[in-house]
Image 1 (cartoon, rainbow, N blue to C red):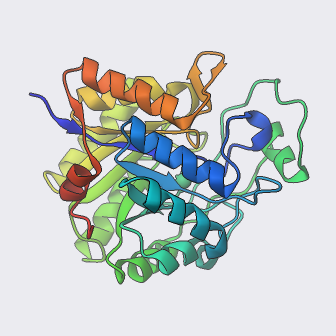
Image 2 (cartoon, helix red, strand yellow):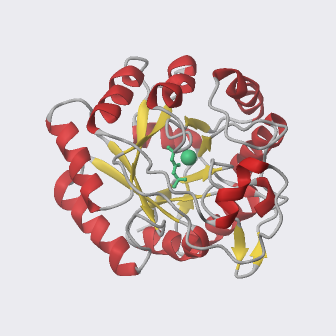
Amino acid sequence: MPRKVMITCAVTGAIHTPSMSPHLPVTPTEIAQAAVGAAEAGAALVHIHARDPETGAPDQSPEAFAPILGVIRQGCDAVVNITTGGSPAMLVEERVRPAQTFAPEVASLNMGTMNFGLYPMLARYQTFQHDWERPFLEGSVDRPFRNSFKDIEYILRSCAENGTRFEVECYDIGHLYTLAHFADRGVIEPPFFVQSVSGLLGGIGAHPEDVAHMKRTADRLFGDDYLWSVLGAGKNQMAVAAQSVTLGGHVRVGLEDSLWIAPGELATSNAQQVAKARGLIESLGHEVATPAEAREMLRLKG
Ligand code: KMH
Ligand code: ZN
């Protein structure tokens, strides 16, 4: 049965660094244009982080987001999803400020404290342009990504006041149970938009059995009350996207999650990954959802 499949594009994130790829968007113009290009290629939602234009370091100030959001709104109709994850180095009060300030239709919500790493990168990253990149390039970042129960509740309560709904990022089975806990307490309302994150060091793997186990567990906990999307980090990106579509889910791609378009080949843009995901979706007999269709499916405020 043909379905409408939502593509989310996460255009830059906070974990990849400029020295890893010349195609990673860094300046406000680059980030905004990448989001608009992703929307033109078929993304219904764009997930946004901001960076310092000089160094590429993550910047969670509302001032860093303002010019990006302005250009995106003028350039396309995609649903804007603002990160509340920021980077693991930031405190939750800082992380939530852009979502509080701009009251987006969607904000990310990370469902547990965890180690958060990329699988060891290739030795290709021998040089770096900025000091802050060094631990990321060396794979020696050793700081847990804190999302305590209080942090999660703080984000939920402070953003939901504005009518913002959540891309609930679940990196392991326990995070689904944490979502069920907050749902039971009525702190978050269905339909839940569950983003199943696979293949990060510290979270569940990207083996088809891992992805299927997340889906089965979410089906059991949430029944018809949720929409399921999956992202695969790094080399797992497209395989996991294909599995998600086959199992009835939605997909997330973008340079936040993977710098690659094929083994050993850097993606030259976010739009290139969106186009590839769109090809997968269409070749499996489905269609990409428009932003309006995504708004309806996720019951967004519009
Ligand atoms: N890089 C993703 C796996 C967030 O922005 O809230 C995590 C992420 C977190 O997207
Ligand atoms: Zn993110």
